[in-house]
Length: 152
Image (cartoon, rainbow, N blue to C red):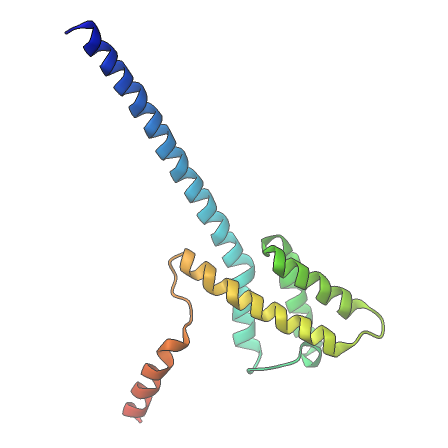
């Protein structure tokens, strides 16, 4: 083996080690990002969606909800504020400010809450896809209706 062959082997070893490090680091960053997305999903977005589905019947005004349920929504949203994206944080601040203002316009607070609900539903779908969960899609409604009609 010659001088040239030894240097080529050394260069190949160094390049292989560097590529292994870079690939490992990228994979670690991917896992960390996925864990962070999972935390956001599990601590804010999924519980909010579940509360909407369990405790409300379609369209509603926040100001007309039972005070205990209002408190539960407040606690969920503001105890997990750090998991919100920046647009949702802005909506939460506006909602809280409007709702807490003495003599506040409850219609405006209800509009803010509606915007919060829409934003959370939107991000819930995005996070579901990123976490390889199947988000709700209206595209299945026709198939389900046909199945229901066939069984009835």
